[in-house]
Length: 137
Image (cartoon, rainbow, N blue to C red; front, side, top):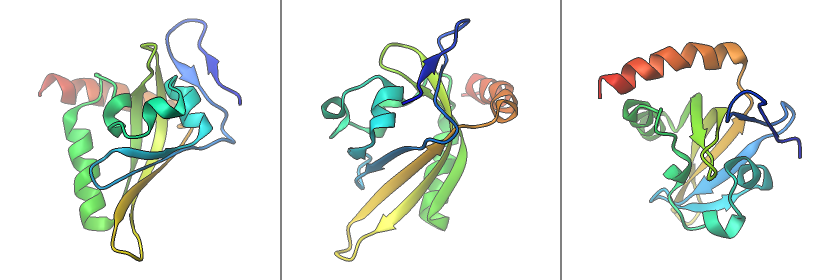
């Protein structure tokens, strides 16, 4: 895997040809995480399975962003946006996330999240917006 840490901060990066994948049950508990998710989040797989997906929620992320995510998933079946995630070691990483509602043949609902590398411009645009939203909570 191509996971690297910034020399100047606690930001971590992954390669633009890789995807972070995870799936949660209808309660938001992780039922699947690929190797890259484990590596970027700095957890072993058995530390993630059964845990709430918000285990990687960074405190800089405003609550309204996740309200929008769940509102869109419920109404449209998907959501996409830029997210700052927290690593177990206290570092962080940014992703361009797409979350999808998946309805199984047996009626179960799960949520699949596919994350790719965002552009630096997307990240820089989110930083002041998220700070402003966070300050108004």
